Amino acid sequence: MSGNVKGVEWYYAACLEKTMKKTVLRLEKVKKHYRMGTTVVKALDGVSVEVTSGESVAVMGPSGSGKSTLLHILGCLDRPTSGDMFLDGMKVSDLGEDELAAVRNKKIGFVFQFFFLVPTLTVLENVELPMMFAGADAETQKERAIELLKRVGLGDRLHHKPSELSGGQRQRVAIARALANHPAILLADEPTGNLDSKSGSEILGVFDELNEEGMTLITVTHDASLVSHANRVLHIKDGRIEKEERAHTKKKKEQ
Ligand SMILES: Nc1ncnc2c1ncn2[C@@H]1O[C@H](COP(=O)(O)OP(=O)(O)OP(=O)(O)O)[C@@H](O)[C@H]1O
Ligand SMILES: [Mg+2]
Image (tube, rainbow, N blue to C red):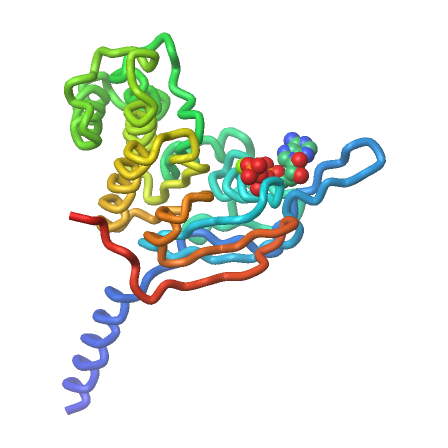
């Protein structure tokens, strides 16, 4: 009898574990202050937040409120002045430069408003680059880069240079590059901010698909259509989270 009860308990614990989302990013009382002469700019002023796996979080707020600073800290591109940051339970705020770069390259993909592709490299080479830094062999780099570029609809543009692409196509290359090392988290700073609405909705479609496959997404945006696809919206003001909204149902991609 007791064996049966144990079995049932184990079964429910296993089911719970499967449905439970785990915390992938956590900030605890994070501040980022810049000293400018005699004044201190408080870009972030005590932000505590948790992001669970598979969430799609939108970050909104006025210009200068600290959105990019927050994203850069979450993406290990910058360090807090004080407070702690945990990635998959590991305290990253204490890591040295090299360790931080290695963690970033493996776990996080970053998409920027202005793409930041290398202009002298082809589309294919741009996507191969992070895999080269991660030490993948040439064949793996090429196969994965082609697979990702096909996935974002650019299988027929492999040997173009970024200057030979439209804005939306450039951003899709940037997304493929961000996905190169199989990151669990994708961070995007105004990814549609520099695009027309058609290209913007293409990018939105790619993000939606990735999130449906389980990718954790955090997107800084002013774009209302992007916000409606998020599970959660963080409103930032003066370096603090002023308000947090949770969507009960996330808008699905239009078929
Ligand atoms: N390197 C820096 N040195 C000094 N101040 C900085 C630095 N980087 C950002 N700041 C300041 O920190 C504040 C937050 O900047 P941040 O770039 O995070 O804003 P944002 O919300 O992304 O704005 P936007 O919507 O215009 O992109 C701003 O007041 C900015 O001037
Ligand atoms: Mg910004």
